[in-house]
Image (cartoon, rainbow, N blue to C red; front, side, top):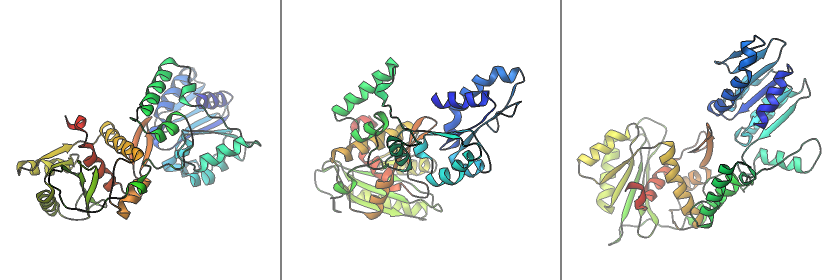
Length: 364
């Protein structure tokens, strides 16, 4: 709302304002807001609105546009009085420094960086600079400072879940208290939990195999992650890339012959026919349909297990790298989870699927 008021007031005075978001969808809510604000002026002919380009111009030369961090070079050569960085901690530092800031030089303009923290990255450095005085000022506002009763009630509920050990304290500190934690990775204590060793089945123990499929010709990896639900530890990890589906299925059957138990496999896309084929062959396979909501459930459950250090995983370098880099992001105002651009999260998802079966609430 602050950024909306600043940019719209600049536009009203026929100034030039830009709003930069991490990706295109992040700008949807703001665009609806500014269209409503400018609707009357547009009908009176004082402004024109381009919905396709997300641009508003005034007859006297005012200009407003939403730019996306995933195409940040499109802002080059522009000049602005005001630039707002929305969820600035999730916008790349190089893009901001090299492409965005130069647009303020002509008018000696101002920038507003608004964001939930994301570790101690460049946004943290800007915040610290503001606390030290000079020409930068910074403020922080936890969710508990919001005067809206419903928001405060939501804060109190999450705070109680942290006290009860049902929600990650690190996530609470970053997402609700607006505090800068040590890094932006979602999982903590990964190295401390990497104490398990590969081992065969133990009589009386229940095993779950989590499966994250990859296309036979794709760049991702198919991963089988075997989890001892009785001892709460990972006992086997297998990765393969480029293998035909019949080879993947044969290896999974052979793995199940060793550990038995249950299988939780991704059902989306090509996973559907693979899961159904395994079920027809008599294997106890549960298909997992990945949506924003279901992915949130399994990865936050795994996050809590690492927070409590109640899980043991294999000391596999690829898995450790993927767990330590796995991120929580915002997309269109909703949490989303994935590896950083150019990296993989196949071992993370397979482990999360295997671990999710240890709680009977999930597949009941």
